[in-house]
Image (tube, rainbow, N blue to C red; front, top):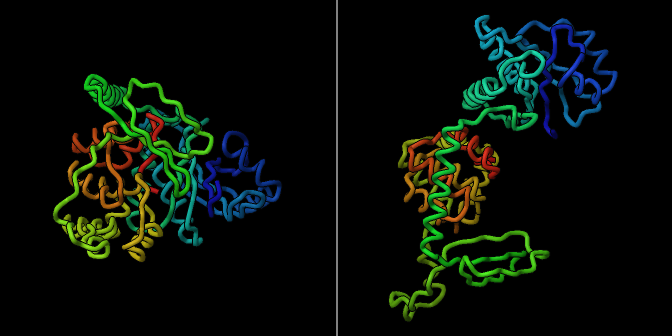
Length: 343
């Protein structure tokens, strides 16, 4: 991780016996061992900072987590302290970014799914008061257990929509983009499609739309006059929604899991800023917009939630269910191998 600081979960002696601790000490080099010997011991639930030496970071924040004993020995209190003390040290040392492992989830036996959800909550609460980019790193998919009931509901929601669309025999437009050029071709779903993808970096499928007749309201108008009547840009539309929902800018971008730098770009370039779809949807979720309002916000950036893609359908599912927790939605997106919300 190319961050200002990484968090190393270690023992009270600060000796890299195994797991993440061993990997960190091995990669950082022998100078880390010497510094750890000088500042040890490390109290349970506390944190200390060292240089990062050979690692691609400025600092290593070391913390000693609890051994899992069934959750009856105050493990959650110690675990919370590990995350909080590490976050505080990152801020105190001027870090703008920090990466965490799942503390105590390895040899110490703390259930990985419990650590993951607990860490997300603690980090989220901390970030409402501080400006910091935090990465939570998991070793593999077995590091958490996604709700099977929710997985089945989303799968059914996606499949039902797809089945209904197939039955209707709808037609789609495939657009292949490279740079400023674009090629398009209208095809039906059951038609065999052949195309050279070697020069294309994105393929987007969307419902076909018939070409509307010339609008009488623009008859006789110059292009300049017509352009003056354009709808509001994404930024201005976003600011309108923030005001109408009674939120502050800080509340909005933090709830959206969007960093301050990104929001500053929106504020500084309101007419020209073009968000990614993930960022635009993240703001819609943070603002708890209805499906129509979400489409309205997205359309101001030339985007839409279609009925054709898993990402779009998952977002539709949560909006229609009235579930607006960006981290819960991101868990679902991760489970279905989709891009996550925010940035």
